[in-house]
Structures are given as C-alpha cells and as structure tokens.
Length: 119
Image 1 (cartoon, rainbow, N blue to C red):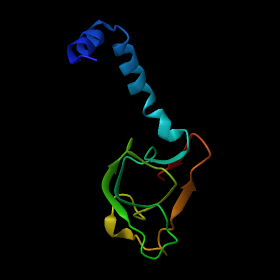
Image 2 (spheres, rainbow, N blue to C red; image 1 turned 45 degrees about the horizontal axis):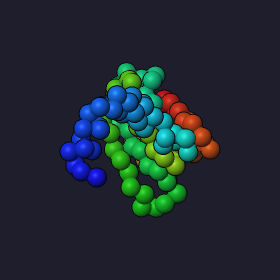
Image 3 (spheres, one colour; image 1 turned 135 degrees about the vertical axis):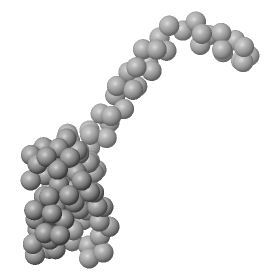
C-alpha cells in the first residue's frame, strides 16, 4: 500500500483519539490484574528512613533505602514487599537492625492490590 494513502487513511480516522485514550486508561490496570503489593505511608507525617526488600529470607537481599518519606508516599512491587523503618520515625540513628525493627511483609494476591501501611 502506498505510504501517502496510509497517512491519508489515518488522518481521516476519527477513532484514533478514542483508541489512544482507552490504551492510556487501561495501561495502569494491566499489571494489577496479576496482583501487586503496595506500601503506603498514610499514618506518619515523615519517616527519616525506610528500607524495602522483595525477599527478606535471602541473606544478601537487595535493600532499597528511602529517606525523608512523607505522608502520601507509596511504592509498589509485583510479587512480595517487605519493609522496616527507623524505630523512631524522626531519628535515623534509632535502629534499623533485625532485632530493633522487624521486617513486615505482604505477598501479592491473585488479583488486585494489597496495601501495606507504613506504621
């Protein structure tokens, strides 16, 4: 097919904006269909440090560290999410060891989103 003809057909197609809008609207839904875990900071105004892992049973699990986590912050993982925070939210020296602050975990559901509140 001639390239000019294709361009002309696309210009005349009034359905493209609708298709584009539907694609944008549905794209965030597709990962949640298989289930996700979301950590949400909804109770404390600011936490000086939060550590997140996807598997605390692994001795060398990659720890993601977030600082100055404000209320309204969230992070989502596809399989499992575990977190711990400083024992005292405004004092990062208050302890992040396994003994002071235990990991709190949630695993993905079959569908939808499980929310874990940062407390």
